[in-house]
Length: 219
Image (cartoon, rainbow, N blue to C red; front, side):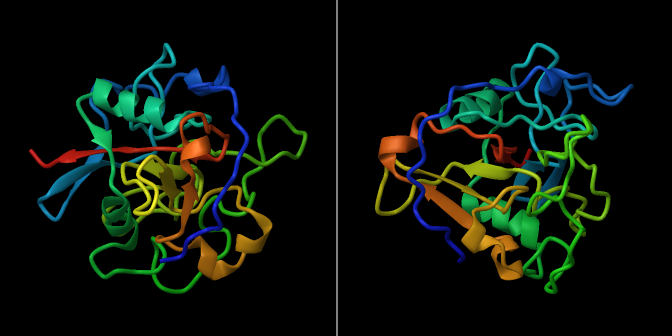
C-alpha cells in the first residue's frame, strides 16, 4: 500500500461546503435517492463523491454537483449517518476503485494522464487559472468498469478506518487533484494511495482536496 508521509497539518476552519458547492444538481435528479452501485453483493457505495443538499447539509450522490470538501472527518461521518449510510472503509474504497481484478488504477494497470482530475489537472471556471475540485463526473473516462466515478482523482476521500498505530488518527485515500510534491509520480496516484493524520490534527483537519463518499451494507 502506498502511504503518504505523516501529515502534520494546521487546522483549517470548517466549511461543510462553499457557496458554490451548495449549487443545484442536474435537473430532474432527486437528491433523496443517491446514485449507488452494489459491489460483491456485500455493500453499496455512492456512484459519485458526496455532494451537499441545497441547504449545504447531508450527503448526496449526483452527477454534475460539486463535491463536498473542506469538511472534517467527524462532519463527513455525520453527513453519511444523516442519510442512513456511513463512511466507507479503506478496503471498500480500494475494492471499488480497483475493481474485481484488483487494478492499480480505476481504469486499469497502466497510468493514463488526463483521464482523472489528478495533480491539479482541473482549472476552475473563474478564469484565474487556479486548479481545484471538479464537478462529480466531469472527467467522463474517470470511471470504473462497474460505473463508479472519480475513485481516482478529484478529491481524496475520508475512510472510517483509523491508523493501526494511532486509533485517534484518521486516513484519507484515493489520490486527488492536489498532492504533495514528492507524491506526484504516476505510481502514487493509484487506488491504494493513502494519507494519515496523527491524532493531534485529525479532529480539526479540513482542506479543499479532501472529501468523502458513503457506503452501507447491501440491502
